[in-house]
Length: 148
Image (cartoon, rainbow, N blue to C red; front, side, top):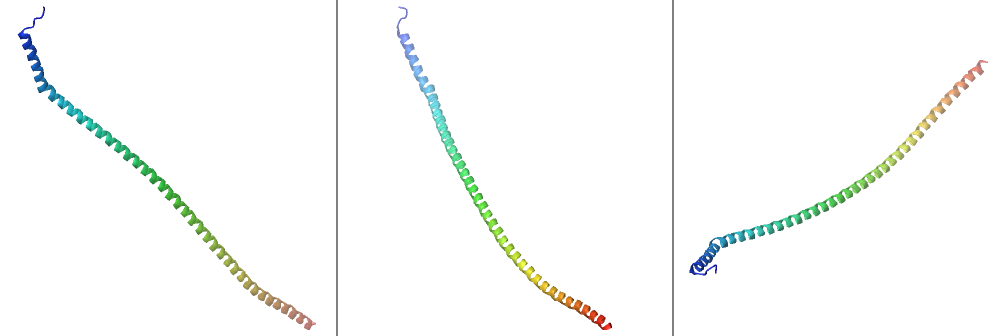
């Protein structure tokens, strides 16, 4: 046999196993624990970051919806205000038209009254002028008749 099993080989094998066991206890397990704790820490932070990202996305969607709702509300308020302003404008124009028509009618009435008064004065003056002219002509005719 090529390989002889003797006490040295067994002692070497046992010492190798003890060495591996000691290495495992002093190096591999603590390093493994550190690696495992770091892995748990990284996984926890990753999960937390994912959760925060989801919350941020939800908040973003909420704000977008609120902005959209506010825009719709503002648009509705603007339309309502424009309609109120248009109605108010139409009412004021209507009131002004009525007022102007009344003033126009009153002005026409005053003009008609003044026209009547002026016509009466003119008629009196015309009658007076006519009488004056008639008197002059007749008076001249009397002078002409009496001088003949």
